[in-house]
Length: 95
Image (cartoon, rainbow, N blue to C red):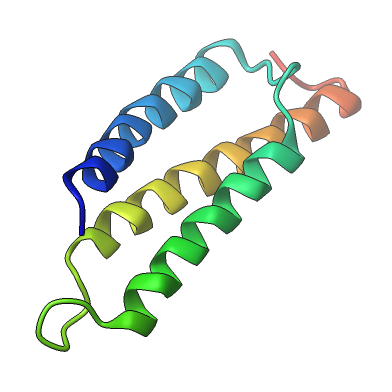
């Protein structure tokens, strides 16, 4: 476990709500890449799997898994918003 890993997860954890808030406020997701968001999600899944498989610190799963999980949830919600607003845009119902 590294303070740098924790710092990275906290910084990313702050940035995703900003992206989500912008999507919710503008209802516009043009410029976002669903492939990029999916790859980020996959990276968080691999981070969680690393902690689970290696069972750091006395055989217990490290608490940083919660940070990975929160970030995974935020990026997944951002990905959901992408598809939701793209669908509404194509349908012509975005207000």
